[in-house]
Amino acid sequence: MDYQFKEMEYEEDLFQKIINREFPTEIIFEDDSVFAFEWINPVAPTHILIIPKKKIETLNDITDEDSLIVGKMVIVAKKIAIELGFSEDGYRLVCNVNPMGFQHIFHIHLHLLAGRKFSWPPG
Image 1 (cartoon, rainbow, N blue to C red):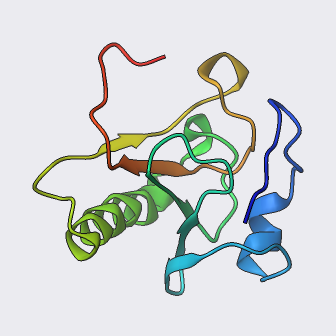
Image 2: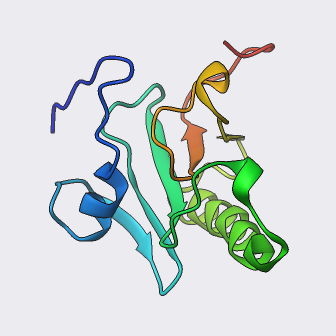
């Protein structure tokens, strides 16, 4: 797949289309509450997004009731890192919040990045 999107061109309901299989991507994990897939515009050799099936716009919108699903997103990231064999070498988890934090799709998502050495500070 060669989908290249420019900044801020993402459709607002893109994640729902991916969950509904209306937009092609490689599915990595799915259960009743969490969905993980290869990102269509990767910035690392491995770039997977982990999202809740429940739409939560930003981290600022997380409620106490959402804490289990948000925690599960991190557990899924860890399991994927182990399954794909890069947990020992290392990986980065990123969650962007609002436009100044570089969030373009307002449905929380965790970026799982691996396959290269990352620098600090990021971006």
